[in-house]
Image (tube, rainbow, N blue to C red; front, side, top):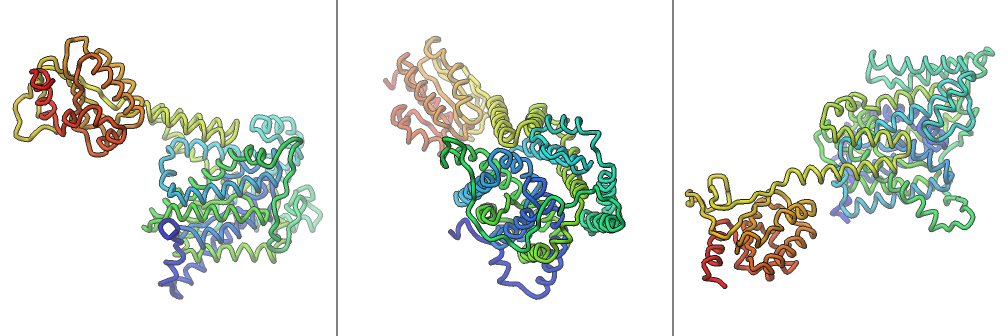
Length: 569
C-alpha cells in the first residue's frame, strides 16, 4: 500500500510548526470565504441545492486534504460536473446520481491502486480545451433563467431546447432581477482591477444581498427570487443514509448500474483530469511534486463518502487551489481549515445564505463560465495543425449539443486515430540494393568506412520507426514481391524499430513463411533487446534461426553472402 498511497499530510506534520500553522490558517480562512458562493452556486446549478454544494465542499474537501497526494490542493464541487450531474438527475433522480458518484469513486480508487495516475497526462490537450469550453458554454446557458428572472419551471435539459425556451419567454423577463444580476456581474468584473486579493464574488454577494434585503424591508424588489424562496437550508451536516432509487418497470439494480456506468466513468475521468491538472499547476508554482496515484485514491474516497450525505461529485479545484497558494497555504492543513469555515457557515449562517438572490448566483456562475471558456486558447489552437483544431472543435460541439460522455469518447477515438495516422506517416520503409553508405548508417562497425556491398540476389529493407499494426500492413504490401526478382536473401534492418506489437509479430511470421515457400532466406539486422525478447517469446527466433538474426548490418550482409554463394544450404 505504501508504494502507491502516501498522503502528503503525514510527511508535512513531521516538521510542522506554529508559523506554518498561522500561514495555513490565514490561507484556509480566505479560501473558505472564496468557496462559499462557489459551493452554493455549483450545488444549485447541478440541480440539487445550496446545502448539497456546501456539504460536498466540506466532506470531500476534508478527505481530499487529509488523504491527498498534493500539499495545497483544495477539493470540492466544480463547474466541470454541472452538466453531467444535471443530466443524471433529469434521467435517474438523486438516487441515480448517488449510485453514479459511488461508482466513479470506486473507479478513481482503482485507477490510483493500479498506478494509472500518469496515464491521465496523455489525454490530448485539444480534447481538454474542447470539453472545458463546451462545459463553460453549457453553464452559461443554464444561468439565463435566473439571471433574467424568468422563473421558468421546466427548462429543457438540451442546449438547443433550452435556448428555444428562453426565446419563447422573452416577455417574462423580470427587469429588477436582471438589474440585480447585472450589478453583481459588474462588481465581480471590476473588483479584481482594484485588488486581486479581495474575493470578488463574495463582495458581490454581500453587497447585493444586503441591498435586496433592505429593499424588501422597504417594500421594494419583492419579485427578486432568493435561495430561501426555492430551497430549505438544513442546520448542520445531514445524517448519512443509503441511496434511495426507483427502478423502472422490469429494470433490475444491475441493469441500472449498467446504464449509469458510462456517466460514472465520465465523472471519474473528469475528476481525474481536473484534479491532476490542478496538482500540476500547483507544482509549477510551488516547486513541489505531487503523487498522482495517491491523489486519485483520495479523490475516489471522497466521492465514495459524499453521496451518503447527499453530496455531489467533487474534485480538485484549480481556482481555489491557486487562491490557497497565493494566500500563503503551505500544507494540507490549509484545506482542512477551509472546510471548517464552510462548516461554520452551514451551522450558523443558514438564514443569511437563504437571502442571497438567485440572479446574483447566476452572475457568479456566468463569470465562472467565462474563466473556464479559455477562448484565447481556443483561438490559439485554430492557428495550429488542422487535425488538432478539428479534435477540439468536435469535442466542443459534442459537449454542447450532446453530453460529456459522448464528447470525451468520440474525442479520444478521433485523437487516437490521428495519432496512429501521424505515426504511420512518420515511419519510413526503405529498400536498398547494390551498396550501402556507412556514413549514413549508425549500426555498422566504426572501422568499416568504405561502401558496403550488398550481395547479388539480396534485398535490404529498412523499417524506420515502431513496427505496429499500421506499419505491419504497410510493409506487408511493399514486401509481397518476394522471390519474383530471383532474390535468395531478404534482409530486414530493424535498428530503428523501438517496439513491435502482436500484429507486427504476426506479419513478420507470415513474411517468413512466404519467403521460405519461395526459396528465399529471411535475415534480421540490428534487432534491439526488447524486440528480440518479443520475437523469442513468440517462437520466431527459433523459426527464423538465431544465426539469421544479427546485431549489425555487417553481420547480416556476411550471412547473406554465405547463403548466396552456396556455403549454407
